[in-house]
Amino acid sequence: MRALVPVVLLAAVEVDAAAVSAMVTDAAGAPVPEAVIYALPASGKLPATAPRPAVMDQINKEFVPFVIPVQLGSSVTFPNKDNIRHHVYSFSPAKIFDLKLYSGKPSSPVVFDKPGPVALGCNIHDWMVGFVYVVESPWFAKTAKTGSARLDLPDGEYDLKVWHPWLRAELPAQRVKVSGTDAQASFRVDLNPPPKATPH
Ligand SMILES: [Cu+2]
Image: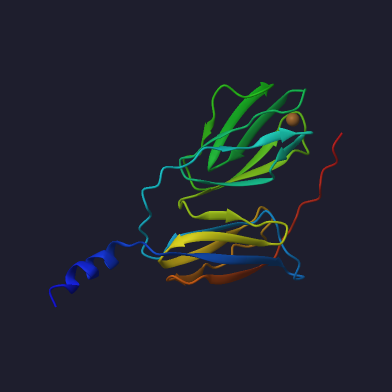
């Protein structure tokens, strides 16, 4: 009996993990790219993970990519890859900022210190639109053209949530249990895209 104790202890400290594959489709069943999928631990206990810096470019007078998910506290740089100047701003409650007319790389990154969606615009090119989505968890991913995203999660129970800039209404979280084997989730979202402004 005594010989078993170390084995039990070893098993207790081993961290198992598995992947959750999430699929996002619209009301017509078509895959939805650029949707953010994130997992919040059901226990409410978030790990002490340092947020990683992120980049959103401006290329051919568009934000690239259209959406970036970041962890709360992340710093994001907004390099201008065009040979004209841009003026990036946000009036969103989660982050109000203003990067006055600039070329190249702005002198300092923007730190996103509140969770939620941040809509980006450019003062010069009013059709330019992009989004930073700030999540409290380090576990997030964005759907590809296929509408799917993959999250690697330590074993445990999570509330899986979806976000997209054109979501008509917030969707309820889906509870998933991760315990060594991969799990699946799917979201059907109702999108309400605004009319696309024409570049000029
Ligand atoms: Cu611009």
